Length: 339
Image (tube, rainbow, N blue to C red; front, top):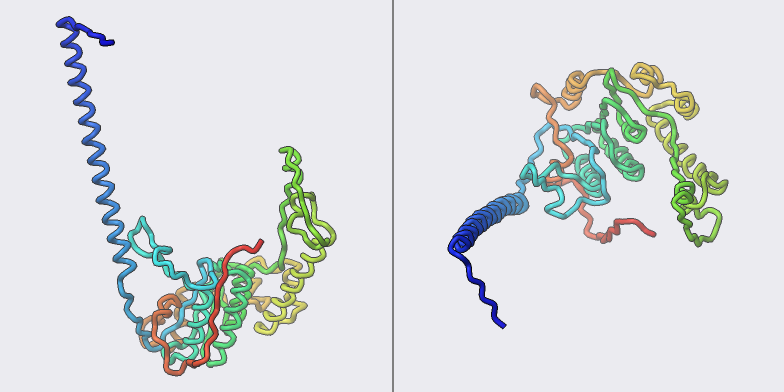
């Protein structure tokens, strides 16, 4: 069946006018869309070129100047190994790579390399911000103790020492603190949040299967406080860790373990002057004064101490004095949570 519609002259004019407006609007939005897509493609193209240039650029070998001091910071999360992902540290906003982040393996390797490098006179521990875990801090501290056997100096300076930062700094020959700074030294603790009450209000009942009273990972979901078994095991491992820390700090700082425990238990450090009087540090100075000391220690003939970051030093060639064993053991890294 066919339907014919006859338009009167004025209706035909309205139809033609409507079609004209529709086509004009359609073409306007079509051209705007094409232009937008083109601009996006141009931007993506230049970002891609920048990424390729940043990744494919050949990093030149770093030459270490005489009387250099290895500048060591841990102001980023220290992973087990340096990432080999070329895009991980790329900054899309800045169009360049951010600061390189060394893994623990490369940090330890460079400390061994620096010990036999005649151009490296010592190490400057810059510990205002330390984001490494206790296990990594302990490995780095042991490597620094090994470094000291070379006869080279280690000095530490910070505006504020966290407990982990101070434990690492305690290996240094001298520890300096900003006059307005302080040291955190109050022992270890464990914070546990319990969700039983919240789950009950939501009408959620967790179904738990476990064996053994020391399996406490699920306790926050079924209890509103620590069980005796969990309290016992938590106190045991925290006490063991703290005793280990206190023993090592006491040995390095020539302060008795009883004194260190008293300082922590009584919260005796309230300011930098307290830390100095309690022999936790060796001096209260501003950063410019510290750099003057650093210049004298390094024997630099310049107006300043020649610093080289450990990330930059990672690109320096091996020294001839380094041990290069032929027999090697391959290491397979497995990162992630084990459930």
